[in-house]
Amino acid sequence: MDKHYQLPETQDGTVLFNTDPIIQKYHYEIDYLHSYAQDSPFFVGLSQGKLLGSHCTSCGRRFATPRGICMECGGKTEWFELPREGRVHTFTTCHFGGEAFLKETPFTLILVEFDGVDTLFLSRLVGAEPEEVYIGMPVWARFIRNSKFKPTDVYFVPR
Amino acid sequence: MRPVYMISGGITKFAKAHPQSDFRKMVADAFEYALADLPGLSRDAIDGSVCSYFSDHFTRQLMAGAMVQDYLGLDPKPSRRVEGGGATGGLCFQSAWESVASGRLNCCLAMGFETMGRVNTWKGNEFIALASDTNFDFPVGGFYSGYYAMMVQRHMHEFGTTVEQMAKVSIKNHANALYNPYAQRPGKLTIDEVRSALMVATPLTLLDICQMSEGAAVVVLASEEVAQRFGGTPVKVTGVGSGTDAMRMADRPHGKVILLPHETEEEYADLKYPGVHSFRGGRMAAKLAYEMAGIGNPGEELDFVELHDAYTSSEIQTCEDLGLCRYGEGGSYVDSGAPFLPNLDYGLSFSGSEQWPRLPVNPSGGLLACGHPVGATGLMQAVFAFWQLQGTIGKHLRDTTLQIPDARRGLIHSHAGTGTYITVSILERV
Image 1 (cartoon, each protein chain N blue to C red):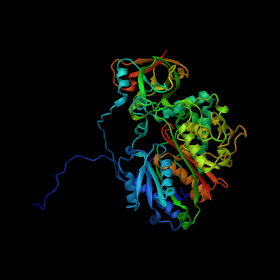
Image 2: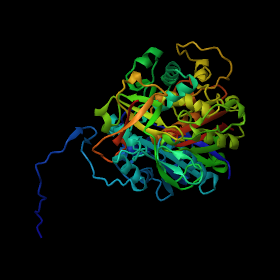
Image 3: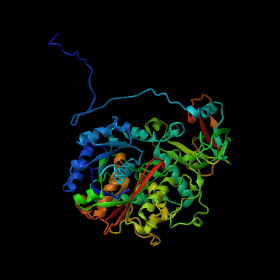
Image 4: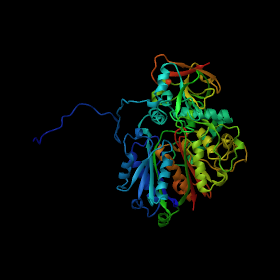
């Protein structure tokens, strides 16, 4: 036993953001394994230049943003390929955003409607100035070549 | 189910940041206020609690609810946490109501907080946007103000709603808050000031949107027997309702309106509902709450409404969901002056339409002006409603301006996501 033992100390400082009260500032980040699971075929589709929706095998409802189970009747759904062309259902240009997207501002978000499809699809519109966008505007899907397996692998341009 | 009464409540000042208080201290301050406000009420009378806070990211402390229970000296009594985005506070209120209505508890504390000032606003916006689908929505530019902007663009397209009408909501709620010392951002504004504020997501400016906040609120709900024991001026909870909708607004159906008793199918023959312009979950919540409270025409039968105006646009949308006016009339409803307090000068002239009875909406200042510390917000609404119905606004706000004379029945409305969880509760004077 050593009653004179002292914990070894380092020269690392602590970032104090404030002194009264004591506020520390520190950074944290993590690696996270995000599984697309049953939505995976949609992202595979994007990498092949296809926009996949799903339709209900029971009631026939067609979803532009795919769902594994029909929200109307609970039936199972199957994949189908959406048309490349749609229309702007609604839109906004974001001048601010969450931290992850701040450097991309201003960007224009649109909900796209497709003929014969019951629901909408959220995407970005590029190639149009904010004041040029309007509800009903015809738009066309384009895919990035180097797929990132993200919903931003597809984007829309004016048609 | 047995009758449930609100017997006391308390709130802290809402502010951008409260660095001198952590979440426990904030709730303790609100709890202390509630205890002091009802002579004889002590922590011994509390049988258990429900705690509400939205984001573990903001707290950076898991099981924070248990820590509040501990800090308040309520261990080993039962407690739990509820969470449901922006509606967390409203869900907490209804969860505490269920505890008492079911007979499981005789006196239940509903306590909520949020500590959003611990990260910068952009990170806060990212945390909030994580309450959108992380497969399809968040990665496209996750930002709730963007989602609400898209909804109101469609509302404007369908119904002719204008940015000036939205600005009037901002003027109303900020001006009401001038008489509410708990509010975070009171102010006297003009339409020009609202429209020339920083553009956040077209057409929403900084003054169309509530702020990040810190604060806490508590509500004490009790059985009739407990309420009688403590005396004071209890208020009865006469109706609760809640509803839901798809997380992704892209998935919203375009079908038929859920009708309230005073509406007919014919008047909505051409309306595709809810689309992205209306909140089906809010309508469901209202319908259920009205049925329980026996309300046939809310515009006529309510004396005030405290609703979840995270955006000026969502106040307009919500007035329609609640049936205060018809779908599509939300903008004209604001123009008419019906939702404004009659005793305040807003610097606005109203349309003079007498289509709708005067029914103050967000007399407290709402989320726009009071702030929105998420887990506390729905409980804050309950506390303001409680004070209105007690007739004690003057005592608590140290100013009687916001007291609605002879207020008998009020509605509180809490709302999450893009209308994903919504609660409506009805409180009445006894």
